[in-house]
Length: 121
Image (cartoon, rainbow, N blue to C red; front, side, top):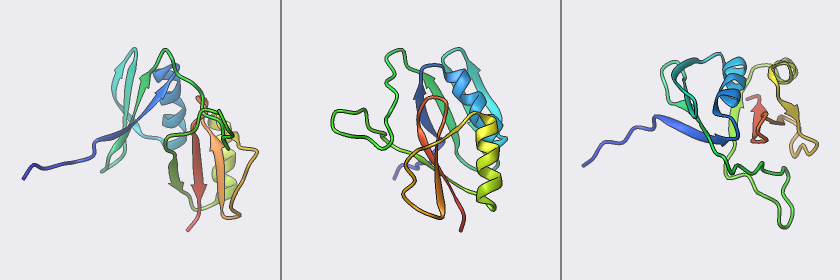
C-alpha cells in the first residue's frame, strides 16, 4: 500500500508572494520555498500552505450569489481570543467579512479574497 502525507494546501492568487507574506504575518510560519510564482510556508510539525500565482485568478465572493465565483475551500484557524486575533488579522491585511454566520466564529477575507475563519473552542 502506498503511503500518503499531506504536505500543503495550495491557494491560488494573483500574486503568490503577496499572499504568502500575508499568511506569514498572520501565522508566523517560516518560508520553505520562495520562487516568483510559488511560495510555501511550513507549519511547525505539520503540513503547510503553498501559494501559486494564477494569471486568470478570479476573486471569490463571500457569501456567493447566483453567478458569483464561489469559494472552493476555506481555512479554519483556532485562536484563544477572538477579538485580539481579529485585530491581528486586520493589522496583517485581512478584511472582516460583511456576512457573519455564527457568533463564535469570525469570517475574514485575505488580500486575494479567500475567506478564512477564526474561531475559539
